Image (cartoon, rainbow, N blue to C red):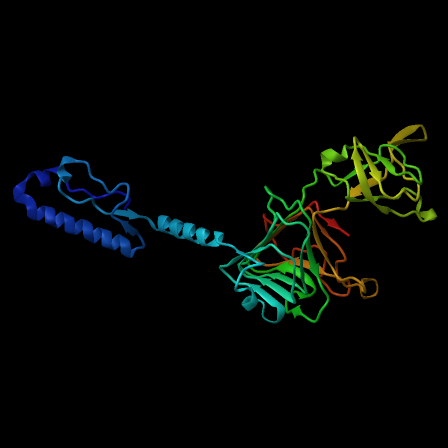
Length: 363
């Protein structure tokens, strides 16, 4: 019922029929009580509780009944209001209690903001943990990071990505999990993971001219500034040397960004083809790829023994939740001796429209 119930006008006009009016009021009250028992909520002061008809003179407003969906919406608003009262990691009084022996837990129903660098044994997120996007170079260091069912980890959003440096560092240690193993960043159940780094309109382009060995200037097919590339970014230049001569791709740091060009801090060690080349009377584009390997969000970890153990960190999302990771860099990753331990991994997620890996650099 969403509107007040009024007695017919002819009943109120007949003084001799007062008992019938009383009967009508009792019936309306009974109907209201029945609706309340079914989950509705009475609001005597609701916007439709006023009666302006002449027959209603002298009678108090009838009760207004809100459907269960309205009541749930009110509860959701209240929950949102409570969630907004986030605790800063640097000042929350309950953090010590939630980090017994270095194993930190963000409790369900609580919202914490990571506004300072931390080094803990392990981190489990059951509530919500939001990265402070106004702080530069924050580091979360742990043996593993698990977003548990119902938890939410957010590092930037699509509308407001993390433009500053953010580091998730996974350390070596004795701690493991029965489902994920050791040295991991992941989520399970209904967990939600959102990581949105500085967006690049495109992550790679081609050389438009051949670059000689020793050169520090690259001429590109696209305008790097329009792609979102910046001074300080690390780029990779693919080799065009025949494999018989043991050519290798190299990594450089961008000193400055020009119009369709980059100036490098380190000179090229070999020639890299660019633009068009004529072969047997025909022209072909045979150019080295130039790849931007820099990302504002970095997932990394201990790797001093990765060359002989084959083991670094790994990431994994499983269950009914989602991981949406865009424009992050994952390095020193994968565990070769173990099945299902990859740099980026949706584990048997089946249909997951919100699961996204986009624009990431895996090194």
